[in-house]
Image 1 (cartoon, rainbow, N blue to C red):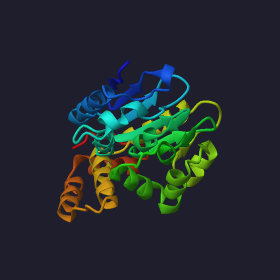
Image 2: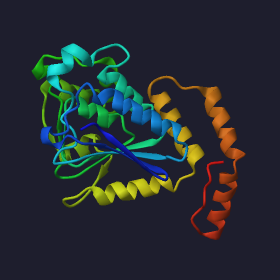
Image 3: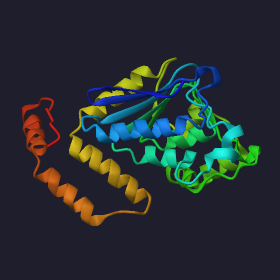
Image 4: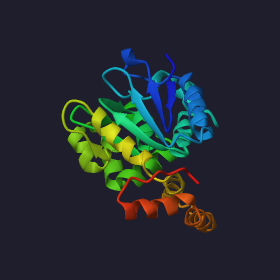
Length: 250
């Protein structure tokens, strides 16, 4: 089944629904995922997008039998889909409850946060399969994990367990116990409690800085927008009154 999207107020949940093949992605999934990202981008009330999956594993990557035929098609490639996720307006969380393999590791790295636990595991078998990875995926690995770890994972196809994923920075948040759901919920609640203007603006500009595309004028504009916002005044009042602020995104 194709991935599904559910929106509930400020939170969108995108679910991979092919558990019988460890949620392997196929060519029809790519435009569907792009459509869901576009829906999130156009839905102003959504602040957080959670990527999750049915079954035992998060995702086993892209169907290797389709790589030569379709995965590198200009403008509609697997990499283009992952780039679109990285540039999603909302804050993105990958809920990695089991294995994340191959191209799905890049899908997870494109997210702002990655939650996992002891049942999580990952590996990148591109070299073992004879595949040279695409540029933006290589850049994400180096940007998120550092050159030495990127080489370790790409060039040796070493499998990492959950603790090793946490230690190398692949997982940004760690869940104790058998389930990661509580940690995903905690992170989601923390993010949706933030003021929308700086939350979404700083996500965008942090990514651009990491990509070497910092836009000083745009950053200044967004700083001034936040300084003049109702939310900044509300944040100050709430701090003094020792209560949770009620942000409105303006």
